Length: 294
Image 1 (cartoon, one colour):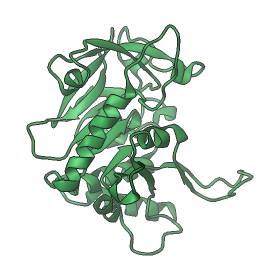
Image 2 (cartoon, rainbow, N blue to C red):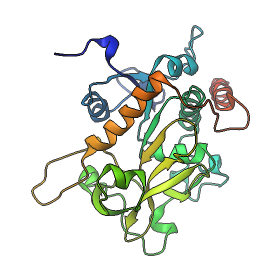
Image 3 (cartoon, rainbow, N blue to C red):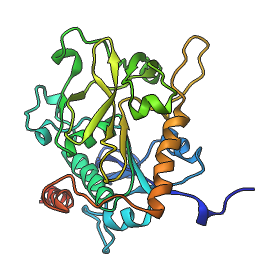
């Protein structure tokens, strides 16, 4: 029998942005916030209800709803993939103009992470989601793996896109290894050119790319009372049957996250901000969007 809505988990999904474009034939000159279908359906496959967490500030903002309201109402959040992270958020200048990233979306994402972490609610990051979680908690990134890591393999193929794969090594004794019954290596999709350089202090690396040893999965130190945060560089929501390629079972990661969300319904994690000043990211986001209007 199908569960009623009241008994289903309510999971937030961070938004992607398409900024106002006077040349766009539809929604001309309007800012769009949107999500990609596969990740919605991935979370829904676990029986959860999914809602996009919209950016509450901007040129058309009205009312008093904040990200903290969403974090209080929802059981957890998934941080969406998407654009590059601005290097300035981890203390660097862009090495090339095309790697400047999206400052505003970074601030929105960090404000979402901040709100859910302060509420003690679980967070799961995918691709860019892993990268912005790492940066929010004090880690750094490679702006471009192939030009900054000697001997690096190709991590993004624009033609193959979500059918581009490489192998990973799973850290022995890690949560990820336990979830997959002691599995030592696996194959995952690879759709990124940036990646973790230095992992954030509160996190453990749970998987590495083979053979070039780039972090592929992170998990917040489990001995902390702070809320569950896990992330993968690959996209678990992009799954295709292929006669010659066997990839990790994406449902294992999903049910681990949803299990954490169910536990947090009863007992949220310890309230914690990734920054020294609470609500810092939310204030920076508001200031940045006000600046865009001038």
